[in-house]
Length: 111
Image 1 (tube, rainbow, N blue to C red):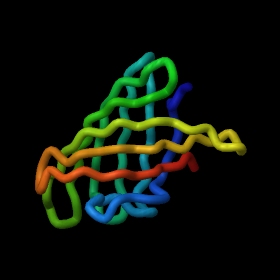
Image 2: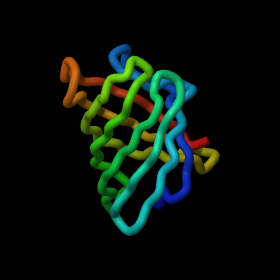
Image 3: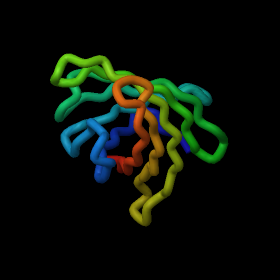
Image 4: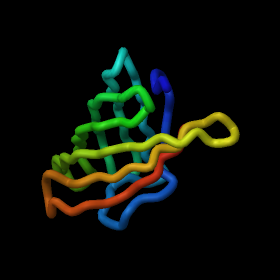
């Protein structure tokens, strides 16, 4: 599975998450290394970096600045699902490493 030059947006997130349906992620991949820029909604600017395994699972770290001017950081594990239309859905389990250090879940889909 290759995520290079794909765009994703959240369709579901835990209440303690900061992404909205206005947040857009632009993924790039080179070998097993993945990066993305993201912004929109309550997020002014964000980045993530991770490693993709042979089945498309992503282990990543992320950071962003929100509209409150806070720097937020976290870790995330994403499991891919290929939809009937060929698009990718990522099931994410994440944890803030800043703020309250709480856990959450999100689903993002390729657009």
